[in-house]
Length: 168
Image 1 (tube, rainbow, N blue to C red):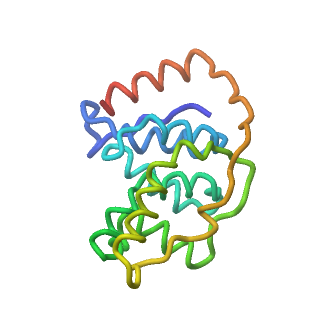
Image 2 (image 1 turned 45 degrees about the vertical axis):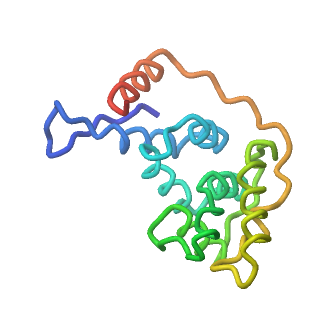
């Protein structure tokens, strides 16, 4: 699939790089989604992260990784539930509802260990009722090795380089 070129208000000087990138990424294996999440700036990537967790096929391992990287300990310490429109709020709502499908995506526990320990420490120090439950399904073991991603052709590599110039 080639990467689309769309523009804000039809202005060729104002590329809608995030939408173009997501149009391409959503057709890739979810290991590519996780790889992007690992390197993306959280603020700039939030729109794409929201698209990921809203996608019906978003795997539980990816939702788990994004959950922990969204720093639930902060909200636990504040004794408040994340806004329903925030990434963490959307993940919680879906986890409490239909959930995320278990697929073949993996990540190492060490990637989220500090965030999980911070949440556990906050819960033990605060005492009392927590403003939200940490979804058990997102605490599962996702250890394993993801399959290698296919190589990209030169045209796709150039198109991605162009997108990332616009995203930076």
